[in-house]
Amino acid sequence: MRLEPKSAPSLVVTLLYPVAAILVTFAITALLVLAAGASPFSVFFLVWKGAAGSQFALLETLTRATPLIFTGLAVAVAFRAKLWNIGAEAQLYIGAVVTVVLGTGALPLPSFILIPVIMIAAMAAGALLLLGPAILKTRFGVDEVVTTLLLNFIVLLFVSMLLEGVLKDPMGMGWPQSSRVIADAQLPRIVQGRRLHYGFVIALVSAVILWIVMKKTALGYEMRAVGHNPQAASFAGIPVNRVLMKTALLSGGIAALAGFSEVSGLKGNLTLDLSPGFGYTGIVVAMLAMLNPLGVVVSAIFVAGIFVGADAMSRTAGVPSYIADVMVATSLLTMVVAILFTRYRLRWK
Image (cartoon, rainbow, N blue to C red; front, side, top):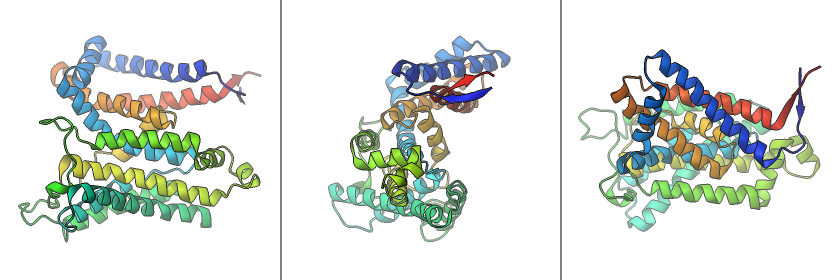
């Protein structure tokens, strides 16, 4: 048995395999639900109802999807150029730290100026954080998977130190949390009385802009070329190292926006549990979208819906909400297999 590359898979085949991957995911999950003693149809209906069965549920799903869109876009951009950014979690937290530092009254600016300034500063911090591993990769050949993964733990320890030190809220009754950002630094709600904020709109705009960059600009072409074959790209005159640096800056900056939106739009302050793993889940989101920026929006909403719906389902059906983790992990594995068969065919000797 061997794998043989396909010359040019048709659009139908490209779409068929991801759909098959999702169906296989639901089939595997259904078997696990049966083993738990519940009806798969009832459980899937309750998950859907909890994720999109009411205005409140739908808005909660979109709120949960907002940071996943940012981290999914960051991973998709980096992976497209074969820069394996596993550190979106660290970049998210750095963006949150900058948001808190500048958003608690350090800059006496009106809201329409303050929010863009904080956004740009957060993006710069996230970009510089990923630039370090990119330099180590291009100059010294250090594996960026290791450096970006380790940065997640380093940044979390750094944030913990800040929350127990200079950023600790004096009115927080001893809890390790920062002070709340001022009203002028907070993103307004899209629907009054609900948690969905304009960070979701920023995420959608970011996805469209990245799609244009990837498909319509010279940088996007260079990133795809480097991702397909860096040796051939270098032979064609593309500065591979420079492209990887630009990719790192773009990817890190987008991931930092997730931290900005969570603090400025939703939580209002910084805590160690700000992210329940948005950076890691962004890898799943990007792979489900097959690294397409517009597809990231759809896959982020899908993944967020699974988590939000599973929380609601577990209270009714008695099935543990951990089934959502199983579904997301299974969908990643099946999607990887789907991508494999999209690009290759099996040949038997």
